Length: 169
Length: 421
Image (cartoon, rainbow over all chains, first blue to last red; front, side, top):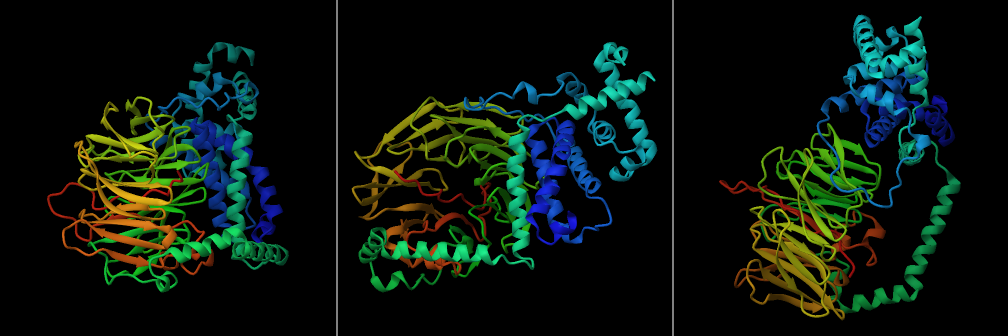
């Protein structure tokens, strides 16, 4: 797909986009907890990928490269974020989110108490399913740092989600 | 084992996640990505002859319509009305700008920077543009992107947006840019380190930053239905809102930041800095506003208005109930009003005559004319040179040398895109 996209194929580009968009967008959302910012971050990552497409080494997988951009940008965004709520009332035409599109709010809220680095580690490990070694490479931090972030994050999530969560498992 | 089970449940929950309105986000993102990929492909090795032929045929058909249709004939009539027939096809400029500094011009061919001697540089194919307060950068709109440019046209940074970007306005402290994305108002950090949506469903008037606010505590006014909201963008915090009134088309702050002027179709209103209504002036009967500009001092408001094919430019002194002074009257439409930084010259755009008039306000000074304005700023684009194309408008003026002991920005915000009454 990357080779065909490099050659200019719209179909290949669309296939790449469809394969990778969902996970990239979801990962960004889980880290930043802001739908508009997540869309922006994932979109920017794809645009960065297109700009660098000619230089991309086809022997390497596309996904980790994209995820590295997404997660690092999401961490940067979260760190820079201060109180930035909207002040205007929502317009009437905007429909509330469909219930089926909203995931477990409990777990989203629990993730929200973690710092951005911990959220990124959880998302990379348990959503994108990278190993701690791969996460260390993606984030350019020591493997021990990844392990400690994951451990602290899971401990905190266990507390936030309450004993019921653990007992069920 | 207990932890493994917990992790498994966490993984399942994470995989079930769908961000709100994910399908819409995917559709929007794919449009942007597809366009970016198509742009890349266009400069690549793979021409698409079928598509090219179709575009050529479409262009030929459109050209025939313009030349042969009654609308084309109407354009021919306009040509007969201009001041001097020979100047409408041959661009002619005065020897120098009538006031010192650099002028930013937005045309269908893109934004241009005009130097004192009328030397011009096109910045690229952007649709809208505005100066940074010190004139070091230009913020421009390109489709769904906000772009910061250096005055030589180099792109400093690019920020994608969810909707079509328009009306960028740089804050007086230089650290924030307000812009519309679709119908939402967004704020970008001036060095591209972040952005956030400030409000949804805002009006068409460009946002207006309040002068003389502390760094990091900038305040912007924007139209929201029949009200104007005044918001401190970092926080954000609602500072105030005006009572319901006519939908504003242009918003101006006075230089001291104490008054907000909202110009609508048939009147303008003056508000306090928290939105309290102070003053209202109606235009003469049946006149419809086609443009306005508040001078840098914030004391003189020029309003262009049209009635039955004739236009006038009226000068109101804020805080005075005296009748307005009529600066100019003539046939056709007038738009794109812009003051020079020193307040000595008012630029008027006359799209029907394809000319700008540089109107001096000092006694004994001569009115100057710039003709062939569309061709002057077409940048080689035939479409931009046509009389049916949007008319180039001055989008801000910068001092060449800002006066000392003057805390105001060195650059101004110029004319907003034309409004059709």
